[in-house]
Structure formats: C-alpha cells, structure tokens
Image (cartoon, rainbow, N blue to C red):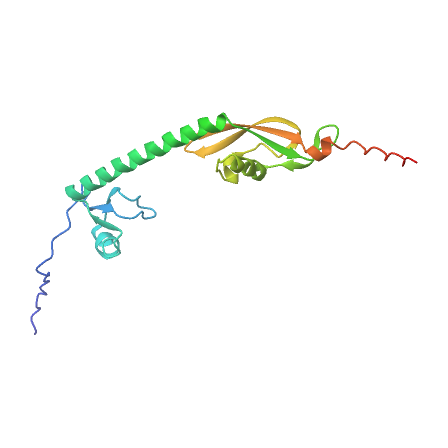
Amino acid sequence: MPTKQKKIRRRPHNFKPLPAGANGGVELLLIQSVDQLGRQGEVVEVRPGYAMNYLLPQGLATLATDHHKRMVDKHKARLAEIEEQRLTGLKKFASELARQSITIEANANDEGHLYGSVGAHEIVLALKRNDFTITDDQVRLKGPLKELGLYTVQIHLGHEIEGELKVWVVPTAASQDAAPPAAPAPPSK
C-alpha cells in the first residue's frame, strides 16, 4: 500500500503576506475608482483573493501603507485648495455676471408678442459679445421668452453657485421703423 505523501506548498522567497485589516480582509488604497468598491484615494478592506487576483495585478490598488496614506492626504489637501480657488473664481464670475445687462433684439408684433422666442442659445451668444463665456446648459430658463420686456435669468455656474443676469428683450430696429414710406414728391416742371 502506497503511503500518502504530504504536498509541501512552497512560496517564493520574495513573498510577503498582505497586511490584515480590522475585519480580517486586506487594506488597500485605491489608485483608481472601482465600481461597487470605492473612489480613488479611499482606503478599503477586501478579501485577500480579490486583492491578489484582481485589484493589485490590474493596478487598481496598492497596499495601504502609512507612506501611501500620507501621500494621499497631501494630494487631497492640494485638491481641496485648488477647489477652493475655483469656487472663489466662480463666485467672482457670478458677481460680475449680476452687474451685466444684455439686450436681445427680436421680431415682435404691436402687442409685444415675439414672432419666435428667445432661448438659452441667444442669451449665450449675447454674453459672448460682452466677453462672458458660458454654455447653453448653464442658462436656467423656466420657458422660452416670448414677449418683450425685462427678464431675470438664472445662470448655474456649478457647485450650487447661481448667478443672475438681466435680459432685455426689445423689438428689432426694423420693426420699430416700420412706418410706411412717404409718397414720392411729384416731379416739378
């Protein structure tokens, strides 16, 4: 009867076990955002097989050492500083926008109803003429402007920062000067 031999499992000489997390898993620092797991820069705890077979070989995560955590904290502080500067710039842009008043000419009848309408695109073009650059989706209209008059339009600049813009919708110069032409004078003899 043959004797059973015990298999010896050998590890490579450079093998180091993964550090255990608080719940028995492995603590990793995500290099890239992973669906259903976490966002870039977060420390997560996963099962060792998931770490060894997917996250580490794919370059999606690295071991959560103290050095890596400090580097991420410094990076997050720098990103927060950049974001604060960006928010300050957006608030300044919103206050400059509030001091603006744009005029849009449109064809209208005698009662002040427009033949067409004024939408976000026309407002964006008028702002470009005043050296303010925004996109159509930043203009918040409750509906197209269909009558002559003064409107206050909300401009969404991002991160819950809103600006207000005064928009004058006026009749075109051609419709104001629509008086019938005078009859030509008879030729003198």
